[in-house]
Image (cartoon, rainbow, N blue to C red):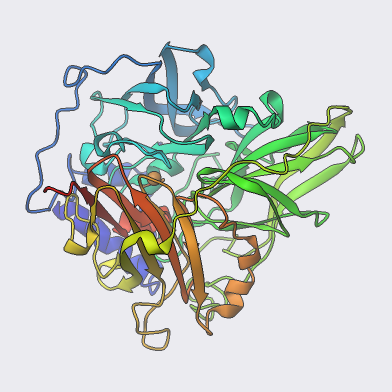
Length: 541
Ligand code: C2O
Ligand code: CU
Ligand code: CU
């Protein structure tokens, strides 16, 4: 635990931006200096911490499943560039029971296999790893019991196994999975550990959306490689990690061959810290059909898409009126960065990356390579979304996002403690609450030293709805540069909270009691402790 604290302090020193401290590289093949500092159960400093559950194959007998999967993580190599292969940490999987296509490998990539499951199915996953530090898998966006959610208290060491068993309660949508051990989530995701988790249901199937090879999940990530093609993890506590090379589905210079017909493109920002402002090179608008928690009620248009870490959007992209040979580029457009004349002023908070937040660059190239006469129709109506009403909320919770030296980024002034829950972090089972995320520098304002950066706030468990946003005068300019790209119409589990902004979300807390996490999904902020538990409590307790 002492060592965890010292790492946290290190991060927060970098966080002050005065020294722009560089995190020791943790990617495989690089200085393994972080690994020995990870105690078996870091940060387990809550006064009532239960002892670590014995996560061995014999500790639970899994319920009979529709799909059973063996999932492993281990060091691996992948050829991304000519020359030396790149050392990564990679998920790999095997279907033990159920449909063989429940797992689909992503070829030539460090990405984990894509899960494809159906709502209502029971899924068993037996997770083991061969890594030099602890790990655990979290199913981002899924509504599962607390013990199945990949809370860092359940992290396992090399050779141990954690048995997951849960029913898929979520509606159809683009979810994903990634590690969640405390303090080292950023470097583990960076090293390659992430994958898609796609859920389908009958409502979605009935729509006849483009499927099979015309339904394409695309994860956007940024990385730095050294001259030997090896990953370099250089993060600081302010901006987090900003890479210099964009990868899509784990590949540099990604190009997508398409036919002249409509596609369903599922975009995930799987980057540690980078926010994208996605736009087409010919300025075509986007037609969005789904967000984090699945389909919207009806398609919506956007001039560009703002995608913060962990957020997803699904696009309907029609290439019907393109010609074979056409090339279209998906770019990240420039925007006012907090690191440059934004809330942080004068470039002092640069990430030390040659691609700063807000810089413009290409993300991927679409090559129209063949003709097709398939013309599936964009449905006018996609789904029905029950609107949660503020009048039904039993409480409003305010969460202030602020830098509090020496702790770094905090939530209501607190850092993560493994099992600690403050009184205001308790929620009654089967109720609805409003949570208000306030990014105002802790009330001190910019002049009072309250630093502000964008924070993509994520809640585990059920999806939420964005009720409203309010932006301060001083934050308005940077906000307006990104806000037309927000898609707040549907269910979400991650929402970008800009400097000077307050965002109110509303959600239900049903089905499961126990400890769940809420945190900033800038993974370096999360690792620094910008994460807390909330506890769902049964009325009688
Ligand atoms: Cu995608 Cu708690 O995380
Ligand atoms: Cu999550
Ligand atoms: Cu943050």
